[in-house]
Image (cartoon, rainbow, N blue to C red):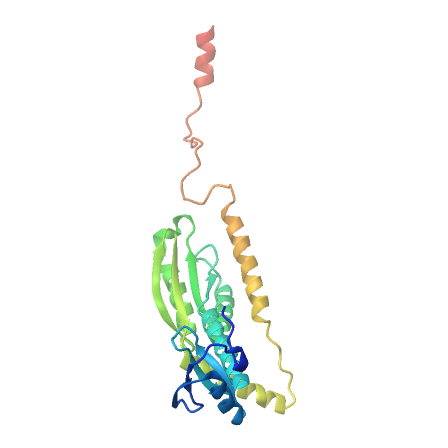
Length: 251
């Protein structure tokens, strides 16, 4: 990253100068521009080094650096907020309603922090014939989160699983945050204990461990529940005469 040149670090001359109010001051000799800046208690900062002549601006460099760092921080947060979080509704459509609520609560935390959430519903064995049950589960979580989120991707199929993507609705999220802050302040005013939530990092680590354990379960070598009968011959009630026939033949 190229270092920003300020004041006497600007060696090239002449330069095009912009004033503190964005007024054009024209092309000036660098020492003259530096003195103009210092007379106002400001700095001369090179902002377009590749132009000919370079463009410099008279400004408060300390304030400029602070504002730039804040802008970069917001950009990083915005970039991070687009990170997708995956939550799985178990390994079967027969997931307990309580377990679905746990996933809803986890998703709410992520959405409130600006993350998108992908819910995945998996189907085990013959359950694939009852896709409507899985879709009902996905719709349930979408409805439960409608106060802070919107459906970005409707249920989509991939193999033996379906997924839905929820994205935070910033207006609704801000409204809920204000409500929660007010409720928290009222509790504190009444002297009630306010429970601290698990940090987002702890929640992410917990879910990551659950996903890894789930993936390891997929690698289990035991036969899946396909609904097919065992390969052994069924008991039809007919006696096995093969051994007797073989004995007769050998005599």
